[in-house]
Amino acid sequence: MRRHLIALAALSATAVALTGCGTTEPAAKDSGKGAAKSITLTDATGAKVKLDGPAKKVVGTEWNVVESLVSLGVDPVGVADVKGYKAWDTAAPLKGAPKDIGTRGEPSMDTIASLSPDLIVATTDLPAAAVKQLRKIAPVLEVRSAKASDQIGQMKTNLDLIARATGTTARATEVNKAFDAKLAEGKKKLAAAGHAGDSIAFADGYVASNQVSIRPYTSGSLIGAVNERLGLKNAWKLKGDPAYGLASTDVEGLSAVGHARFAYIGNESEGTDPFKKDLAKNAAWKSLPFVKKGDVHQLPDGIWMFGGPRSMQAYVDAVVTALTK
Image 1 (spheres, rainbow, N blue to C red):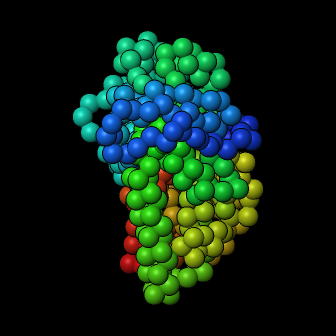
Image 2 (image 1 turned 30 degrees about the vertical axis):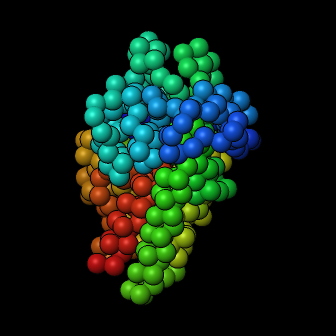
């Protein structure tokens, strides 16, 4: 399953110490009027990225950066795993027919080169060897994949850096404001319904060798951070990895969350739902308080748990609706 292979690999990734920042020489204008002026940015690895002007033909090697581009009004010419993106990230739909450049972990260098991009946007999860090859094709802007100590801040930093590279800083401000407004709205709705301070355990699960593995989204995850901003309490006591804030447990480990409410996101493209199907007859699962109460909430498909502001707005709508219905 593509989602789990990529995300599990990310658990062992070393956190990048440098935070992306950028400067322009001089600053590029969103209006596009007049001659384009050169831009110099410092990406998440500390590398200097120089552009002749705002990038127009852009390739995205990871779904979160593709979402950022689309949210900023920049239609990427190349996207990693187009089919997967369309299934997992519906908050920022692709327009037109971008070229599929291969998998997120192993993009096709030949395909990307054939697109003659102005800029390639990648994350720090992409192997250094692949980035080195990409730099021979076009300037590469790397954003930090995730940061458990400040997921929302990192999400906004990534959007802002990509905006500076594409001359869309005004649009980035609008996107971030819309996200903040959605958080405030969701928190207000939960409080009005008497759910302020509710404990919630968000997870996903998958089946390997006929065994169901559970992946808790701790307070260090992006979903966990959004839940806390909504006034909810994270029921997981496990420590997540330093990048994504994800942990690992089994069905028996779910007993540790007690009477918390349980939510998850699956996707029909995966072909199975371990919580509905594989655990349906599992005694440990059926004995859990939230299962007995019917307090298990499957949120809609197409919300990318590692996405940007648009995905997180969709998540807020989904979880608020689930908890207040």
